[in-house]
Image 1 (tube, rainbow, N blue to C red):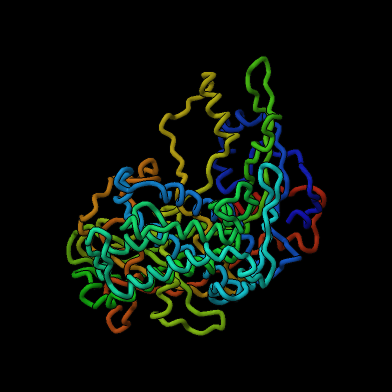
Image 2: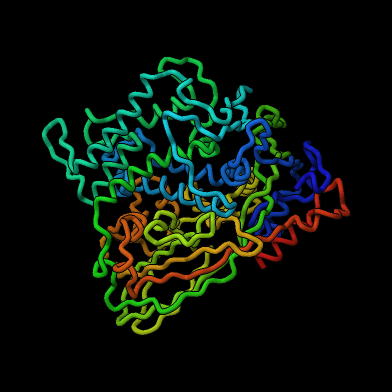
Length: 560
């Protein structure tokens, strides 16, 4: 985009007194906001994604997705909230079904990544092998704070050249042990306690073991295999005092590497291996007595690439100014980057109930065809559906038309306030110029709303929605209103609305003769993609300058 506009790789003085992001117009219409920002000297720099010609491969096309800041932040905060060293008994993580929640998120991340691959005509995520070279190299081109560049991996790199066979053996041994206890169906701890692995709730033990957290069910079974595997991929030994930076050593960078997804398929396969031991849900188990989904309609689904300014003012560090001992924040730096987004959409769900009752509604999105255009059977496709939303609803007796907007989805969050804006809001309140609410909340957790849809096609990318409505059993107490202050982080217990497994009903193998009950509904739709840069391909009249009409055009088109 920046080359199309004739812009070079340098800092530019901002021509507008506000940073660009999805919800900028909500702020710039306020005189209060404009007055706070008017005296700040803003500079922005065009930022691209990795364009590595040396290690270029199929995965390079997906860099806009795998290097997306929100995508990587989600994984980072998940692992901060449920850090492997936090004890559930002390921090109450058991309320969140900590092991199952972590494992479920791994699976959902892989499903979303596969969906993005499919939109580009790529197939399944490549299988991981300890004994064969990995096809896709990666050079993040990142530089750590001390100026040391991150290490890279060439295409068709053979891991056995790492050495570190003792570490490799420990990792493989740990995986074999978990496979064995799943296959045996039980595990006997050192004190003689027998854990039944044929109970659905035992997934909590499996999840804790796969994360290598301190809740692992037996201290003699405990292994840091998960941490060791990342050290192994990063070429870091036990006794290394100086570790070279590598994306696998940081939660906030590891999802940039294509090998992350291949390796984490190993973790997800354990999840599936456990669930394969349970029979498919029967018609009676899936059916909700007296509840029927009669119809569903979905508004137009459109993806596009928008622009966002990321606040990187902390790069100034010691170059910030103090005037008479007072800190002066009079300049800000922003990295301007294109990113995937979608037009807000909604769906209408027609539900018929024989009585007034509270129900739980789950919404999923899945592909329709594989990379060759072949219809994917439900038996196989169940492992591709991503959960978009879950919510409680009070239906009345008779017909109910339920309207739900993508902006209401339970798991998602929007763009956050920048540090520059937050600082000046607080200082204005401190100086008595403005009021600042003491209870303002912005979540650190949550999946980016703009990434819930894979990139569409100009002709329409065929996908399908899936809805399931079940009576609320009251097994999990829910608050009357949603508040991120207690949803984000540990011990909230708000990740689930009932005691059903995460991902229900796609958590188990499917028997299609039993699956189609009145309270489930599939809806075929297509995702379209609009090329927001099309107008600049042939003629850009303001060459050499950023065109703010570009931002105004797509905002007006999609959000008004």
